[in-house]
Length: 423
Image: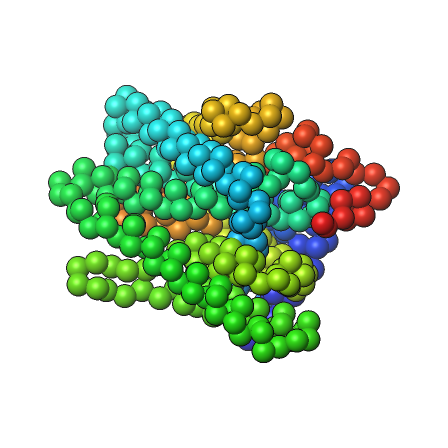
């Protein structure tokens, strides 16, 4: 226990110290957290096997998954705050259109590129693996995006649209992956499961939205019994923890395997709560300050669990580079096309796709499922390689795009918090 506590302390201090370096070279703080995780991970300081000095193995990092799951829950809960009815009336329909189209276009682009690669070099990658990677490509990491927006207090049309699209992206990505993985399994094993391809994904989304709505309503009802700010924040934190725990449950109803999407459940909880609670804005701000250390740990642990051994596999790097290029093109041109179709201003049209490049937790979860395919190990390693690249450069690109449209004030002698006050 003492070793874990020392490791967590080292992760917090190391992550914060690295942000001093990233600030000098004008990179977001989240990049510093990720680099700190790499340095404290089992391939650098952790390899010295000094107790408390870094994480000695990937298993030790994975043993702290309760922290990463909790952080994702709070991040999703905060993103749900973006779905206020007043905002949805203005941009909701357009955000849904963009969120669906960019994800589908990205999947199609990556599918085409990797299937052509499979036809040309069948010994490197199979068609089932190519189809699965195409679906995984649709996923965007909400955590890195939210951290950049928070750090620089970004606000404006692009920022608000981005937060909505990132939230919608999770549901779309889940459907695309479930369908694509079902088709890939059928091609690999010669049998199609209608339950796996159609029924179970829909059940998961419906159950997730239902549980999230119920928890959001229940949170608002319970909070009415408390009046002090500290107690209301405490009960809010308790409900997010409860929601994260409930979203991990799985059960069987006849032949149908039922589960929940943690991100969807917590997003829906935040959405319902922020629309029916009059003081939700204030509570969200207080929760944000409370969860800052948890979010730092989330990214440091994310950096520590990146398996650098994949860099020793030439095939993984080859397919990974092709995957990254195809996915980046799909995200950029998919967002560009969907923005044009919904008549978005040129600054948003030119920059939204770049802000959608970060990829992490959701994609890794999909990759673990994809590992059950005959050559699923390749899919998992390619996604690991892509996450390594996207997590290190994605936040910087998001910052660059938000700077380009004037939604982040240029850094100078005053802090971003002063120049971009929270509304």
